[in-house]
Length: 474
Image (cartoon, rainbow, N blue to C red; front, top):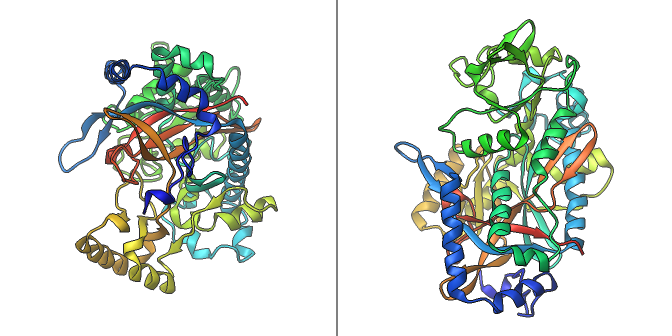
């Protein structure tokens, strides 16, 4: 991929400064590089002091790492954001309608728009959710939509995160760090706030209360525990919302309600923001060996005694094979053409697509259908002959476990290096809150950046970092 083909969000393709970056560029040109290098180190010290880490799972024990942060913001104009927001809202509403449908009448299958086996044979489909209507009709209370940009007005959805999307704590701490270090930048740029996200999240969750609620809704965050890769975020969000952070052993079913152990005895919980996967949520209904969930919680849920956010069974909506049907899903439920495009996708479960993918592995990105975090994927253009041969064997053995996509020319945003600004590839995860009261999209999101020159892999587990994301008021 030549750099001439890449759209740079600060400099465009022609090298002319784009308007969202004008104020920042003038400020940067007037700064002493030595001061900025000190500020970069100060940011790292702040993250270390606050314990902003994530765990990387390797062959041995999980390794705790500091997530790299770059001080150059990613800046999006108000016009661009309004366009993105319309597309995001359309997509999130369609996902919720799709989830309701597949767990009830399955009209989309009856209409022939999605093959029945895409649902029935999908490990993320939960038969236990059939006929269950979540409180307020909301399945995906918190959604992260991964976007990539390839041109001035070209955005694609790379992935839908509908189970337990992570990363919002980094969005908030990135902004807090920038406000602390460069307050003058915010007086010169009219940047829309992101700091109200925890309050918005609490209100959105409380608005999704179950029928059994009496009085003010009691909200809690369920974490798998200290050794989970996103534990920092679980604790951070519980603290910011002013709610309890609980583990499975803190909860039990009492008188038909899920109750939390307190100094005053067991108190019922109305809304549980769970960061535990479906499989481990209830040992009586799912994995009997799970120590992370709450025995019997699914029975309470089905009876309307608790709201679980996100609802069990939502994972089928971020399955990468289902992703390939999203244009049809959006059109089927909204009656509109999708405002945000999908990346063209080959389903390896289809013989013709499999043959094409194997013949063109050197040019494609291949992903596991249920994969995440940058694991289990092949990036063709940077792969070796041995890696492609190994992946060909995997594809032939389990074709339905993979999809493939073209290698996109992801846009770049400059990072701060010892020699000045240097372009690096980025993606963007905006965060969406859904409640019976409506859809709310935070003006910003998590920008992940591939810190290695030429790399397209932005995941923190694979060496990527993060940036503050600015949406301007214009």
